[in-house]
Amino acid sequence: NEGIDRSLVVLGALATILLLTLVALLAAGPIMRVLGAKIEAVITRLLGVLLAALAVQFVIDGVKISLG
Image: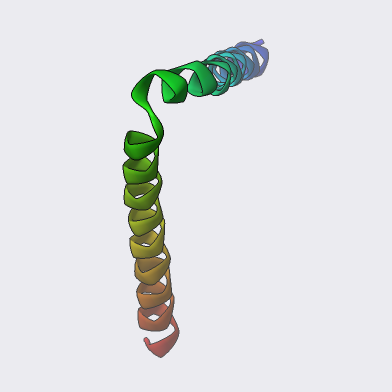
């Protein structure tokens, strides 16, 4: 019974995250239209830099782990 309760909690959390993601994706278009093209370009570049930094960090962590 406790295992079922835990599973239901996890499924509830997953459903909540899926719903929040759906709301964010549906709201992204109207928000970007309000902010304008310049702000959209700035946000895109900032997120690109963040993604690149994360990728570099993952490679560094992988090299550290593989070397010992």
